[in-house]
Image 1: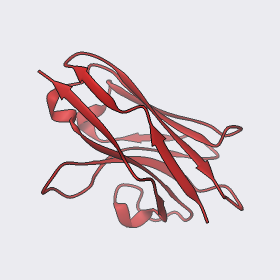
Image 2 (image 1 turned 135 degrees about the vertical axis):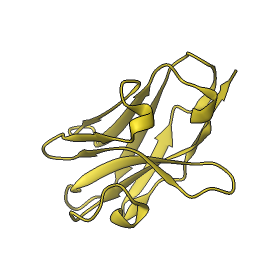
Image 3 (image 1 turned 180 degrees about the horizontal axis):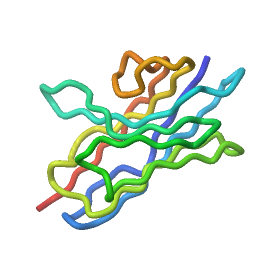
Image 4 (image 1 turned 120 degrees about the horizontal axis):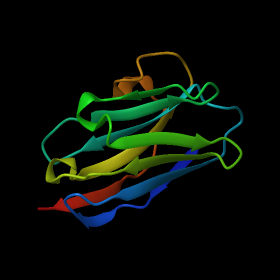
Length: 124
């Protein structure tokens, strides 16, 4: 059973930076894609960024382009999200996820396993 564990969330002032990590264990083979989603109370889980595990192609939601960078370390089975120029609207619980087929990587349905989430709070 695949397990994903996020870390690196916290409280930061607007304009600050955080780096999220997501460690994976229990895999029997590599995923097709790993991604980051975020969710605030009463709203649906929102796509933030994704990266193909073998080719390293990255995808971003428009609102984070130029501020967030997704990356992965295949040898460490770890996914990262470097978040710069954080704004209060980035406040959310951030989840990492991985998918094993080429379904839509922009929606939660495209992923098979999820972490428990890490809170990111940006104060104004």
